[in-house]
Amino acid sequence: MAENTTSALLDLLETERAAILAGQFDSLAPLAPRKEALFAALAQAPADPATLDRLGRSLTHNQSLLEAAILGVRDAAARLDHVNTLRQGFATYDSAGQKSTVATARPAFERKA
Image (tube, rainbow, N blue to C red; front, side):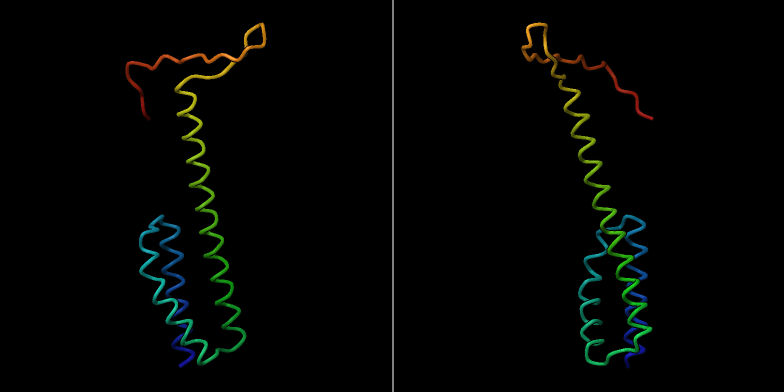
């Protein structure tokens, strides 16, 4: 039974990894109940240390991928915020040391690659 459980869990972790790499984060939530059930079953019938090590490596790898995806989204959001701030104008200081804002003119149209 433990062999079937670990095999199913490894398949599920591979599915999770593929979803993360493809950026299909909405498909991760439905996997969670299945993953919890498989871990509960694994706790009832423990596997051999080599299989547990393989499961641990797979879990760690998926966690690393998720952390990298989160950091990427945060970086992209920060960059967009910075670009939007620059579109509104930028702050500078005059010869008297007073802060002033210089408005930027918006182009009539925007080119996109």
